Image (cartoon, rainbow, N blue to C red):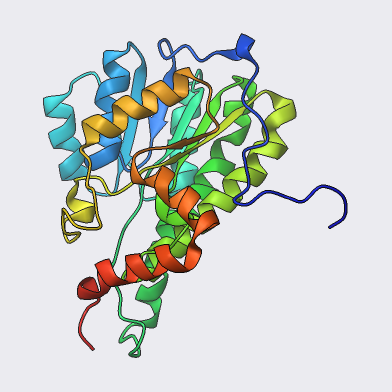
Length: 276
């Protein structure tokens, strides 16, 4: 590369023009994986902010519980790992919620894995890829025309581990790095269409997904309330990458001292690797 030296990590290309400051009310919002954890926390907040909110999930029983406790949330059973489910979801939403202008790709799974032994089920190795990466890509493609027509927003949930991996969960971290890269390209391609493309990079959040991560020491586990509040501030500030808590630290440490931060995360997560 000639000319000025490129910075690393890459800095988002721009903030949105200030005449596009985001109003967080009056939207129609679809959240994948919204029946629990981070997705449900955002669904409740967006309803509170006077938006129409639809959530999806794989288990109808869980969605029924969400609906009973939160009557204003619309619930649709759909699995982001299944193309047929996503196609059916897109048709249903376009018919029933044609003003959809906010897609939050949130569905994800997290697995600690031991890579030093052969997997008993090779297909299971791809579960995180199929859901975390494939689900984001397929769902975005299925809804891109509707979001574009409504000059809307796509928010992809990745992780601070997109910048530097937690070695105990190698495939999960690889999926989040993939989502990070995909989101940057998507942002460039949809910029001329007036579609916001935002990436949310949470740290460890207290949910069922992160139950095995020890609190204290090298890890700071935040609540969903803290994550939601920080994200709302980031959206109002028109940030393209919203790094919360330790995600910001990982961003800079990978640039300044990559060997140190990689070693620290390995030290802190070694006990989480399943036994051989």
